[in-house]
Amino acid sequence: MLNLSDYVKRRNGVPLGHRDSLRNMLYRSLGAGRFSIFWKYWNPIWGYYLGKYIFKPLKLVLPKALALVITFVVCGFIHDLAVILLKQALFLLLTPWFLCMGIFVVLGDYSKIDYSKLPWIARAFINILIVSICLVLAYQVRF
Image (cartoon, rainbow, N blue to C red; front, top):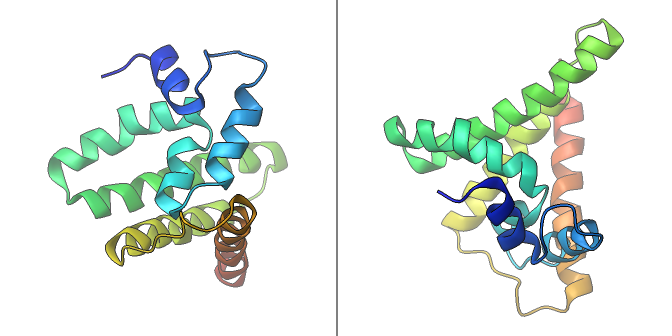
């Protein structure tokens, strides 16, 4: 497995801490032609640790799709946990939001949805739209 520095360089095209890292991450993730590719480029540091400590161990005992969805749920819960600690109150919006996005990733790959031939701005719009739809759905079922 790649170390963190090599992983980030592979995802962003520049070394860890480079001044163009954020720009490259946004350009590559938003312009991805599949929603699963969006996540490949989004926040590579966080993705590295989720992959190493959550997804890969789960994938050893569960089907890949289920391991991926659970990884998204764990990621959302960690985000919610940070909000819970700050607000000192129960808050679960990010867990269902990430659950929804994980399901979209799996369904998009299963259905082979590919919009990579569209212009960058259209791909960015689609990716932001999917994230937004999942947020609205999660908001409807928040705990």
